[in-house]
Length: 348
Ligand code: FE
Image 1 (cartoon, rainbow, N blue to C red):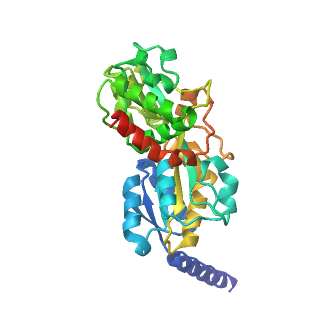
Image 2 (tube, protein in one colour; image 1 turned 90 degrees about the vertical axis):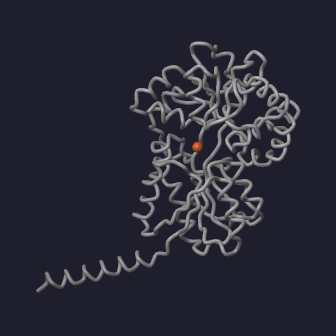
């Protein structure tokens, strides 16, 4: 008699759980993360919370433009961007809803999130970091000639430099950080020097720059660290050949350190599912999601609780490197200045 009774209770409990899961409203995520390995990250959230994710993929500028156009009618709950300056832009355009979360404040170092507003709420948070590093042709270039960002604009590297567009967020943020370190007038001279040093007009993405160094079209180039790590972890013979030919520098180790950018997120200003949105951001700061950033997309976790085990990043840095400690919101604040300087020196 007892056995069927227990079964009945179990069945009721199961029905209740399913109903609760089915009722958990989905969150709508506008994402500029363009990394195939992220699928597992999103699935992990749905599995642990029952909250489904409807994802719309666009680049950073596309996400911000769409939020603006949709205004109060926007269905977006969470915004994921891959650049600090764009996160800052979203903040000043009022597109985010600042969040108070003890979980996020405890997990994420202060310099990797926005400054809190007057109410103590934070407009956006970094969830992973990437270094903007230098790669060079080991057969032609001496490492000591390219181990600082400043040297990319030095006349000794004339005709050797390859870069993607100056107006790409990854470069704009590097230039914003350099403006902070050098001051505006020296930063403009540096930008002009890089224009003079180019081996070809800016084109392609970061991986294209690495490949152009490997093929000796360029002597030196700049890339985000995870693109190189991806090639290092690839099984393809052509990728291995590329990695064999390029040297890697984490620049400015004897001054302010290597420029670090973030991928991060925020709650959308007009989210109708605030609790779901905050839960998702808190999930991104959790150890399992942080490990995903390290191993899935070869980024560094922001959480100090997570031990890095990514072998490609270990190999690249020799275990550790000096990263700049400038608060990440500074790169956003320098954006207008940087854009004007790029126009003045003809950096496309
Ligand atoms: Fe990227």
